Length: 347
Image 1: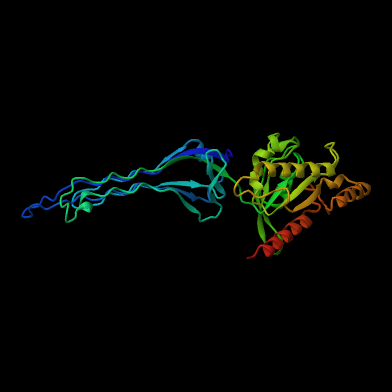
Image 2 (image 1 turned 90 degrees about the vertical axis):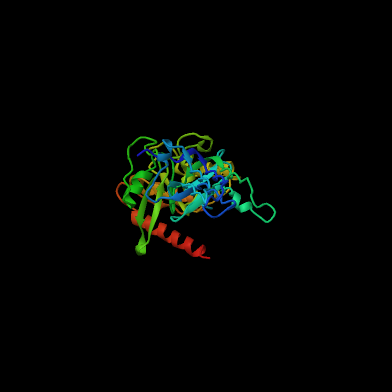
């Protein structure tokens, strides 16, 4: 299934039905007076979370959602039927924004979320409504109110507790496949992961949590280089990061420099998003630094890396996602940080 996380759609609520102009026509009731009923209300445009959906793919083929108009009023003071609502089902974590993406209009981040985005127009009053002692035979009725319309941008932000970040080929996909039941594509070339992957991890003490594997970042990602910038929004809601770094030296990069480069991209991304409503800074979020592919390191290399990261006030974990070395220690640390987060944020 193709992963689509951004799309623009057009929505319109229904017009209210017009009130009726009608007169009683009954035997033995001379001059029965007005009996025109009110028009029905137009249908609303409603966004509703559907937990079975994982992407915005359906909106690629259907981008217009129109609620029904209300029916006109009828004789004998009968109110016209209301228009049917346009109920738009979206994945959990969908954000409704203005067409230019600058204003957040609705954030559907809970499983029971339902949001009335546009209300339908009210039905017009029939002529019987306007009858009074002065005007006993009104020959007019109200037209229904017009509905509203808008073009909006839907943006999907996956809901995960932990985000795995790092350079391409750092081993993120291998790691998520070892700690969860997720089975992402794994290969020995950069940018194997083209979409975010979610996995449920069973932590210590029967605690389970969701982890998101984000496509690899590179230098210049905040300006659009590579793939990572396109998907960074999916870790905006995570509680902390697992920063996975290739410690083998096979990439030709220095692990300590990789750490700084990725964090710089997070900080620069923050600057581009700072004015956006509902945005949470990434550059200051807690991280577990994990040195992957450490099974190829000798003791001297390990000590050298520990020294480099201690200067950055970080205490890295050594891991081999391929062999499983250090997996349990990492999952235990992830669980501990989540427990700490929940304690700190209990209101």
